[in-house]
Image 1: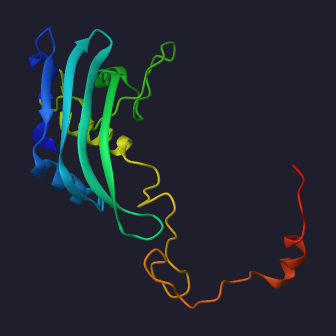
Image 2 (image 1 turned 180 degrees about the horizontal axis):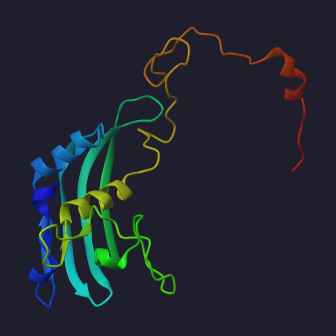
Length: 192
């Protein structure tokens, strides 16, 4: 992702609109981070970047559709992504203002926010702060993914004994009754 950095100084005072819609970039990110998905509708992130005195205002949206494996049966499940976002990203401070470890400041009187160095960094060649819009778009994509992907709300999943998909097949496996020593606890009734 090193080739996607550009200087904040190049952003006009009125802000800059940029789009991350190159599907080769999205595909390389899916491979790099091993996301087991298939793109159904091309992914596109639209970003508006506006430098502020104390950070960088980033507003935008991400859209597209992918398939992810269902967490119960491992079949493909459609995931439509339509998210809007806005955040004020803190700017990295010059290195001479930091102590020896990470983003820890030498002056303890002021509070600092943690800077995401994958998105914003001090230019390695000097000349100010740089942003990587692809890294920002990737973070928003990951945040837009569902915590638990299901093919349907009533997915029966896989049989833990034979591995058949209970949504499409009926297996002859007998359900595990559990540890026999806990059988007396199964008869306890709890009043609500």
